Amino acid sequence: MKSYREVISLNVPQRMDFVNITPKVAAAVQKSGVKEGLVLVNSMHITSSVFINDDESGLHQDYKKWLEHLAPFDASPQRYLHNRTGEDNGDAHHKRQIMGREVVVAITEGKLDFGTWEQIFYGEFDGRRQKRVLIKIIGE
Image (cartoon, rainbow, N blue to C red; front, side):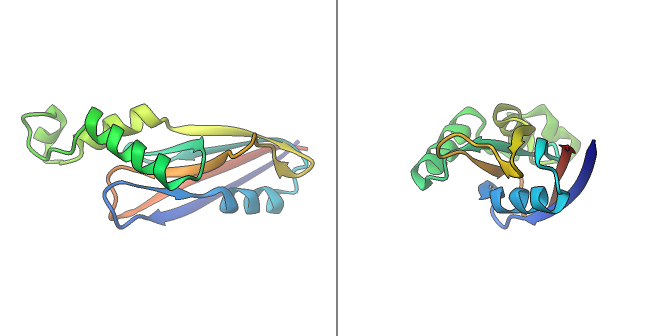
C-alpha cells in the first residue's frame, strides 16, 4: 500500500471565508500515484474547518449568515469564557465544531470519486494568519 502526505498553507485575509481546495487535493492525488484508495483532508487548526458541499456563492453566504447567527463574533469575555484567556476567537471554535474537522473522499481510477456538485472547502473562522491543511492519501 502506498502512502502520501502533503500540507498546504492558506492565509485567508477575512475573519470568515471559504476556499475551494479541490484542485489542490486533486493535484496531490495525482502526485501520490494512488489509483484506488482514500484521501483524508483535515484542518490542522482548531478555528478552521474542511467540509464538502456545492461551490455556489449563495450557499456560502447562507453558511456565513447561519454560522454568525449560531455563534456571533464577540471579542468580549462576557459571551465566550474562552475569550478570558486573552483571545477573541471563542466564536471561531464553535463555528469549526459545527462545520467539522475533516473529510474523507474515495479515490477511484486515480481521481476523486465525488457525487454531483461535491467540492472540498477550507472554512476559515479566525483568519488573517497562515494556517495549514493536511492531505493524507493511502491506497494502491
